[in-house]
Amino acid sequence: MKNLIVLFIISLTSLAFQNNSQLDLPNNAQKKVHKAFDKLWDGAAVDYQQITITDEVQNDLDADLKRLHLYRLSVDGQLKGYMFLSAAPSKYDYFDFMVIYNPDLSIALSEVLIYREGYGGEIGSSRWLKQFIGMTSDNEMRLDYDVQGISGATISVRSATNAIKRLTNSITQLRSHGKL
Image (cartoon, rainbow, N blue to C red; front, side, top):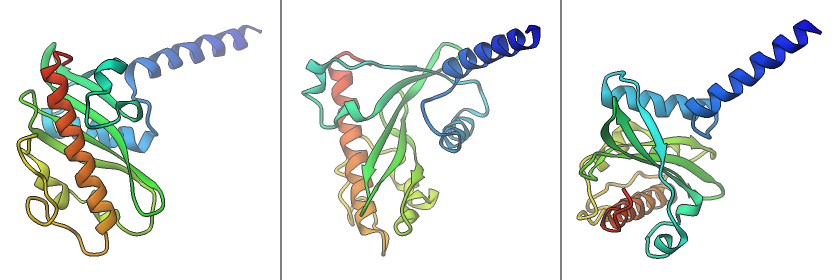
């Protein structure tokens, strides 16, 4: 009985720790998010706080925030940026991705977290994704002009580009509404 109580307390403690320290993502996707944090902020402990958007503000945005999550990122209480976690369609399924923005709302990093199809996964390469770094809502992000495509991944490339553009426009709109 004593062992059962100890196990119960340990389980509750670990659950409380998980809810406070992890995103609602599979472990492999969480590792990619934390690896991106390490890359951007040299291994500093990043605090992320979810930003809630009202339905009224939601109706004015480019992106459907009901299907994605927005977080404020800080290190030692200092704002480092914002992060969108979202999903976009590929040919038959969808893929999960993130976009991290600097405080000035330029793109700091984008990453495909989970790709669920056999073809088109090349959009997850850092070589392709790095072309978004520095872009803002002022950039058109036109495929084959501002953003280069990938042969054999046309649907996923188009979807990722459009999704990143909508998120970037939405985060700018949120700032203009005073929600950031």
